[in-house]
Image (cartoon, rainbow, N blue to C red; front, top):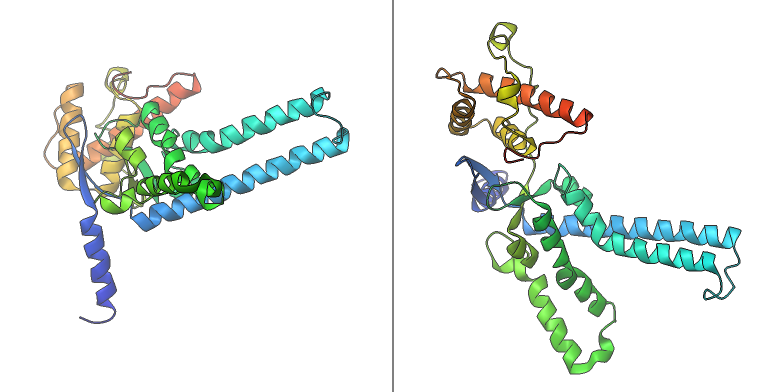
Length: 298
């Protein structure tokens, strides 16, 4: 094997090792790739860096306001302005610690900026919609996995003696947990029923890529489009990106059975592209009027 093909073979073997099949509640099988441990570590480092820079910048901003407008040398107990600033700082630190990850992972991309940079996203292991409860659970465990070990490493637990050393060893079990399971799951992922998967996919063809003579035969009304929500739109987009004939056929059959249509063999791709465009337009129109449909159960 040549030196050029050897790295490629190693990469292909690694991808095959991380290949999984996600079965949605509708019974559809979607292939995905579990995020590599190195990518997850890199994403966390980036997020902590962004979090630290943002927090420090905002603290400097508040300090500048305090020094410029108020007497910072006065006693905080007798200065209501300083007390208000201290409350803002405490709230900021709390929101920075928990709100950063919750905000981005609850968003439509289900990924923090660090995850987006390295091409990762959070997904539900049961194939369903990623819920707020899942995201909250996986991030609450982050205290045990990240922040408490950092506290010990930075010297916060040096005075705890043998008990502190034992606690540090126990915390390291959580830190190293992703190294001892094939899906690279954190303890938070195990608790929440989530995993982190690769989001690098080929660009989706324009939804209106149908030829005009084929596009006219697919016209959907309110009754057909109101069946599904944002979660189903994301699943459909993933299927179109991957462009696997088996998945296209399964999804097309599921949708046509649901909306009472019949579809000819070989028309799956064209039908799904048209339905994707129509459903996306329908959901976006609803959002403009303050109406959101998370999934078909909403």
